[in-house]
Image 1: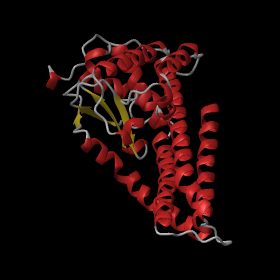
Image 2 (image 1 turned 45 degrees about the vertical axis):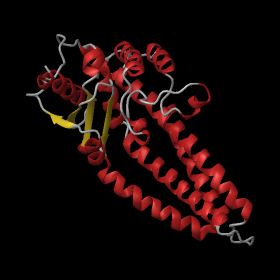
Image 3 (image 1 turned 90 degrees about the horizontal axis):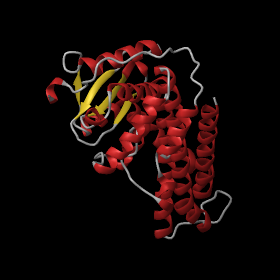
Length: 300
């Protein structure tokens, strides 16, 4: 509940940044036009981004005949979560990671890399898959799209402000668009939007962790998986575009110090600590995992 409230407040704050930036740039008319265009772009992204994403990473769909253990685990977890069975995809790369995509639960997909199958036990992978189903259950894809819409509109306003300064724009009247407003819009607004968008991404990771742990009955498998995935990506980083880094269960982008401000994910140690402290007396009883050996037959 707290994470949902935090996400709502952050989305509201992101909307506020958009409104202020639009007003500083060109008054209400400029704000409405920029926002409308951004909504149109992201509407298209909402409907087609999952297909583009899977194609970008060369993912191919797998069924029960290709990887019965993985497919069966997803099927069982989806049933227990009250979700339609998502499609399951394999990404042919050694970096260990996973993500979920799709515009809603009826059009969802869960993808894992071949590398994740080499370092996790069946129990740990079950925790990872439960986390990804948590993203689907919690509507995180829609939330991410809304955040991207706002951030995209703000970035567009910043670009308009930049060109306005270059070509000597900046009238100082009641409609807005004065030089100081242009400068603030160009420099401050995109930075603020980025930080808010990252905060939303981090909040949704905590929520998916909590739901995934509840779904399998304990937080330990997911906590152990996160630690292994963090170590695995340090050795063999996931090859990912920065624009999609927030989708993966652990960040494929490594950064320390000041760069940690721009992390799309919470620190792994913080996530592990929360998982170990969870009260898991929920409606989902623990379920034992089958024998090891989750490697798809095509990789054997």
